[in-house]
Picture: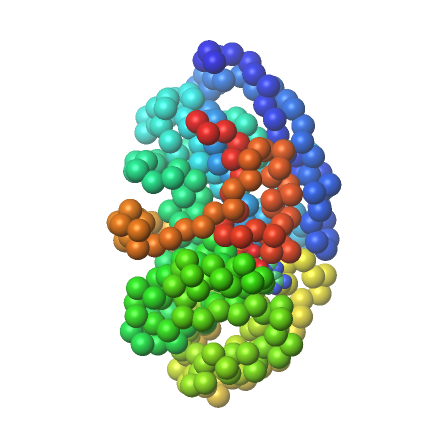
Length: 346
Ligand code: NAP
């Protein structure tokens, strides 16, 4: 393909703002064209997208919000945006050249003109699967690292519970906790995922929350002496049951509450008084504000991955046209591991 050539560019277009559960028909495949050259005088970078990440926060971007939100909404009629791994095809920016590999916010399309190159992360270690840069070596990895180590201050022997434990973040938190010498239990939504937690990621115990009619009793079974650390990914009924089972002085990292994202009216949480009576520290966080830790995080996790001490399971879907189905699957638990879409393999 020649520099400056005009080529077709498949895109996933966001149709319009939604309420309730997202559907594949909220997005549509369209084909436009793009010139494979950065416009003269611009600082932008032209990339070929290789891997796209499906992330639960993207549901927030599909809503029309009347108040400022932590992420901007998608623009109806334009491609969705998300984190991706891409290859630089043309650049006027001094820090990037043709052939560089990067991970960054990009478009759900084959080629993107990225106008904010300062937000790009150059990939220097390619001795690992490139797709990991939207997973264990990217935003989800840093989220697991910051949430667990910075917010929870874990100690050897402590009892850790993780919800949505087989997902892109949960599977890492569990393995970090095992490396720290903790007792680790995870919940997930199928037998296949429960087996993965115990057999691939080394969790001490795991259970299928969909088969438990009494979550409080399930947690008592696995934590007869209580929970020191809860890594919160789901919210709702699980959070309520966890609060009853936390130990005095426990810590909760509030990472996400996916069970609430598609509800028109969020469920209430009834057991918040436990925060006071058991002096629990519950803290919400956004990975964006921990991005300064990224180099330290890479130094920590890259050797562990290369030495096979951390496993990472991805759910890889081939083809941009299958991205909408992959994204909505997060909200019914269709994904087994980190959900990635392959647009092109270099
Ligand atoms: P993920 O776990 O890879 O995928 C989402 C999983 O959530 C699904 O596979 C499903 O697994 C579970 N789920 C879906 N609906 C549910 C429901 N109603 N009740 C319980 N579980 C449900 O996602 P991830 O990327 O690791 O993200 C995990 C959480 O972290 C999300 O809440 C996300 O919003 C949050 N997050 C926060 C930050 C931050 O900066 N704070 C950054 C990234 C992500 P099951 O089969 O187990 O139900």
